[in-house]
Image (cartoon, rainbow, N blue to C red; front, side):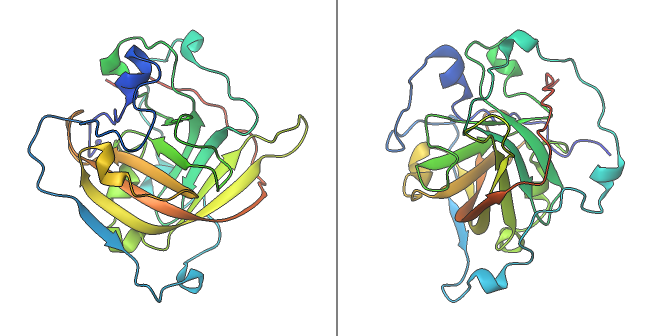
Length: 248
C-alpha cells in the first residue's frame, strides 16, 4: 500500500537542529509555515463523557490491520552517531488504540544530517524541553511523520472516532533492572489545522500531545491528538529497539 502522506512533521525540529534553546515556552508564537490558515478546528468530548466511555484500557500493539501484516519498505539507515541515548524517565515507545501505531520513541539529535532529512522515519521523536513523561509535569510532546508507517493512522479516523482512544507511553525506569513503566492517557481532544505554538498554548499540564502533518508538504498544517493522563502501571512489553531510517 502506498504512503498516504509524504509530508515531514517538523514542528520545531529545525529549532533543535540549528538553534538549541529556541522556543522554550508555549507562549512563543512560532510559525510552522508561511500559508494563510483556514482556522483551527477543535473537537472535544461531551462534558458528560467520562472514563466509562473509553473503549479499552489498553492499546493493542497487534491490531488486525493491513499494517500489522505488511513489512514496511526499507529506507536508508540513520547514522548511529546521531542517536542520543535515552536516560531514566525517557519515553521509549508510543501505542495508540483503535489505529495501528506502535513506534519506538527517541530523543531529537543534537546535530542533524540536514534539516530536510529530519524527523526520521520508523520512529517518533519527543521534545524534552516541553515536559517529562510522568503524567504530571508539563506536556509530553511526541511527533512523527504522517506517513503510513509512522503517525498516518491518526488521520485514518475522524476526530470524533479518536475521542476516547487510549494512548500508552512506555517509559524507562529510574533504576537499572526494573521493568518499563506504562503511562496511559485517554484522548479527550483533537485539533486540526494547527499553524503555530499559540494554537496549543492553552493545553494544560498532565497531557500527552501527538502531532503529525495534515498535508503532503513538510511546511503544511498540523493535527494534534491530546490525551489526558489516566494512570501509571508496569509495562509487560520489552524494551523496543529503535532503528530510525531516513525518509525519502
